[in-house]
Length: 154
Image (cartoon, rainbow, N blue to C red):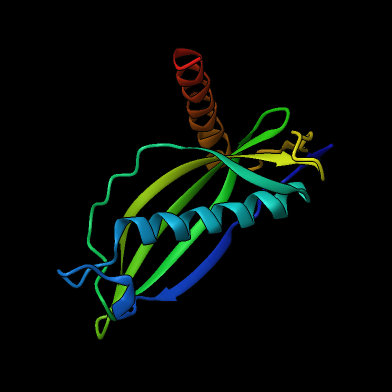
């Protein structure tokens, strides 16, 4: 079965308890929110429960400050037999300018699981746009790198 991917959008405020002593969001908090957004994309795409298998490097470009609004845009970009690579882009909006700035991008690999926690097959991703085809190639590289790392630590 083939399926098109849809973008999932989550929007949040940065509250004081989300920030460090510099008034910017904790990196770990943002990674947690990215993981949740990515899981939602993987669940919606596959129709299955999922677990996080891998997180690729995330480079934070612009700080997100207390009071900012941040938006996470996640989308499945690659599928294998039981796994999905999800791209999560993060943007911030500073008040009062309401200008959106790109903050970071992360690639997360999720594995679909059955009731016993065993890997389960997922639909094949159907790329429909030029961007879909471009990011399919990126996802393929990310999946290969994750497998290579796994082999090195086995």
